Amino acid sequence: MGTRRDFLRLTALAGTSAIASPLIANPKTENKPIVISTWDHGVVANTVSWDILKKNGTALDAVEQGVRVVEADPRGTTVGVGGSPDRDGYVTLDACIMNHKNQCGSVAFLQNIEHPISVARKVMEETPHVMLVGEGAYQFAREQGFERKELLTEKSKEAWERWLQSSEYKPVVNIENHDTIASLALDSQGNLSGACTTSGMAYKMHGRVGDSPIIGAGLFVDNEVGAACGTGVGEAIIRTAGSAIIVEMMRAGMSPQDACKAAIERIIEKHDDVSNLQVGYLALNKEGEYGGYSVLKGFTYAVRSSEVDEYLNSDYSL
Image (cartoon, rainbow, N blue to C red; front, side, top):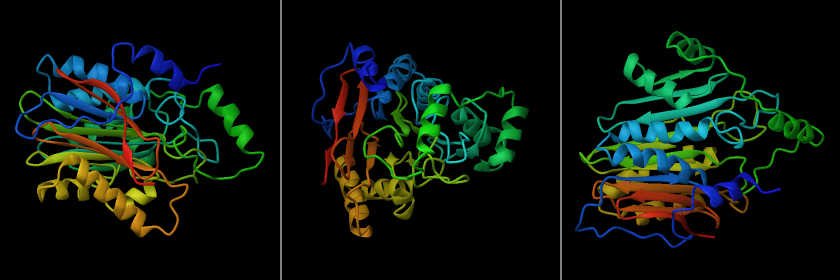
């Protein structure tokens, strides 16, 4: 039986080119609108996002609606419905969103809500806060009209029950136990936004929160410069404030590709052993230049604009 990744390659990639090396936009020409998203499910997200961007929609709407499709797909085990539970059997979700005005919203340790990214947007737009967590986030979501939904599918439950037999907590590099969907977009008005959503590490400790809902770690947007997002082992991203660092490197003049590479090199430098530690970064600047880089081989991402529709292997360090 084929995997979810095989399915995505055969369907969503039907109109795209084969996996290629990253194509970097000419720095002297603007390439907008454009959307860039992590992993195989980034292809599906980009299809939805591009439909919004090509009609002069906002980058914020594009990234939110794009990742919602992934949140609702029960075939995935790393985002939303069907996400792998923690070691106690609970599916807990993290997400954040950020717009071109540096406004942002975030939820963490959210249970029984299908679309944490949309709850995060409500936090941004309807409250004076940036982050709500746990029961408070759930209560807020229900007050905002989100329906309660069971997120643990039979497939994910069976996999968790098999895991309980050994209870070995060990991330598997480039296998869908930590494949966050993160997305960055630049719209026709020249504004940037980003979104990041995940069910986190499979079989994590109950209460664990990774980088995905943390502004400056899993996602950061500065409309004067660019935006960046991360995927992989969240603890490593948090320790190095990955996305914020990448944006600051772009502010200092680095290309998105070089900034992602420098941030990955920092992770390698700060950790004694990265043999089983995968982190991948994406970055997008105001001119529509983009880049991606990872610690280990295997990180993939998708790009969509009026000129590009591709699924790419990132460059990597090890």
